[in-house]
Amino acid sequence: MDIEKKRGRIARIAAVNGWGVAVLAALCLLISLLELSVAGILVCLAGVVSGYMELSGRRRLKENRPEAGRWLARSQLLLLAAIVLYSAYNLLAFHPKEILMDMPPDLRSALLAYGDQKEIEGWLTMAAHILYLSLIVGTVLYQGGLGLYYTVATRKLDRAAAESQGKP
Image (cartoon, rainbow, N blue to C red; front, side, top):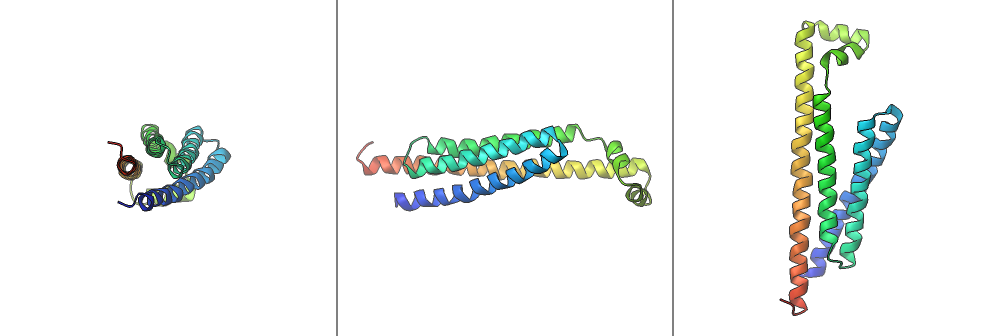
């Protein structure tokens, strides 16, 4: 195994993902601040910290520091936890009657033309469940998978480096 080639590939993945997460979270943070959404602000701050941790883990990886893999994996676990908690909060705090009443009157009237209020509330609830459960599943697969990749790949790197230096 070419250690430097493998290290470079992990570092490129961490750079793209880390910058992507940090920039997206920072943009969402601005929106959350404008809306004064406490839950949004908290999850966005966790995203910015996660992006920073991933970029910091990348720097450690390039410096051949042994804790790099832990930084990379933990950045994914932080983001995973933040998104899952945010989604669970939104599922628990979802009130279709309030959503329907907060809609502009013409939109509410248009929706009510397709069914009674109870039926529309059921559709809104189903849509919220689909949205947030999909977000949870996608996050577990992506962040969980990337965290696992970082853990396994950096352990293999560390073992290969130790073997190339004659250490068992």
